[in-house]
Image (tube, rainbow, N blue to C red):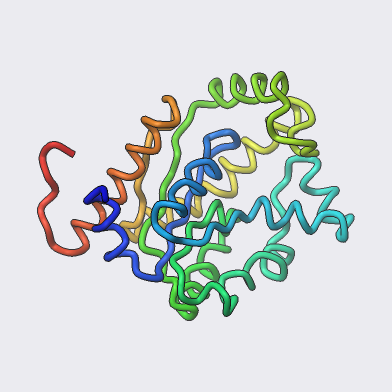
Length: 216
């Protein structure tokens, strides 16, 4: 087994890693693969909220316009997943859990109480131009299903602005806590994933007081 995986699993325990990025940055793709390698459970706030849209027309209206779900909806729909008994023995890979400024504190405290303390936060950096390119390609391929928030470019622009104004302050909180791992996502999936893995591995080594290998 890859030594990086062994080290990360020992360091992570039942903790969690939260992944953020602009739309089409690859959060869920990276997150699912990371969860598989680490024997973790994957939780995406976007997937959880979209599953709730059918029963919540107010939520559907907000998210279809490209807006983030209100904090009240996040707290009642997504946050309880972090304390589920069937997840207690597993580490968690989170995809954008707590995207609105202020929500990160509830995420941090809930994860601490449930034994899933946040050990690292990955930020997938991708340019807005690349986001638009990936959105256009996705529309042609129709590889994301019928998502209301992918409908047109105006909605995509709203999602980008929501990230900049509401989620970047969340990321800054994690940066100040020295949990942030920024990774360029303007590359092919394999390269991005390898860089994410290296970033987490280096944080694990640092937290354990080990030197980081020069070839990493």
